[in-house]
Length: 114
Length: 113
Image 1 (tube, rainbow over the protein chains, first blue to last red):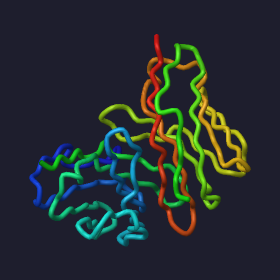
Image 2 (tube, rainbow over the protein chains, first blue to last red; image 1 turned 90 degrees about the vertical axis):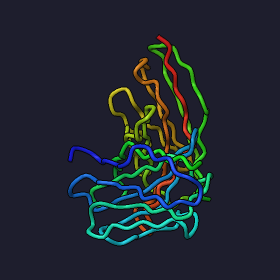
Image 3 (cartoon, chains in turn green, purple; image 1 turned 180 degrees about the horizontal axis):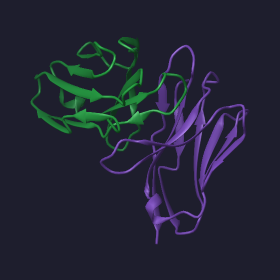
């Protein structure tokens, strides 16, 4: 595709529910990143994939958050037992090699936990 | 040590003026310093980036000035236009030993016509 796509664009859920957020990176990009952006703040790093493996998951806030990238392309961020504090925009980005280089961001998924 | 501090929080500039946004970092291991531009409802987009082996980089109306000893870098937008009105984020990352990118809190720029 032309750019990074994320689905859904908006997600409203109830406290305690499980959600999955999907990211389709730019074709051929080996590196994929997930960020969380709260209102009025910069993106906060969650996890970085190089290929199929999570090279750095130090930003995941707790064990309710999990992400996978089974075939080295599409990634899914999974949040269990959602809390109101999880409400934010979840951004996905990809880059060609995962070195210090430009990251291309998707439009984000706006998650609202009621 | 992982923080990137950005200022000002907001900035209003007249059309044709110079917009200046500043950032400071603490971790000397950082070796890549990008600036991203974000419009409402969109993801951030890379504007310009610099590595610490140069003190300045210019691309069109956008210039990064980098001061390694002071651990500071800044974005200058020359001849600012209303279309530049957006939120700007500085960031820092290191190319080896982890690729976590740390973003500043952002600067909301408004360019008055």
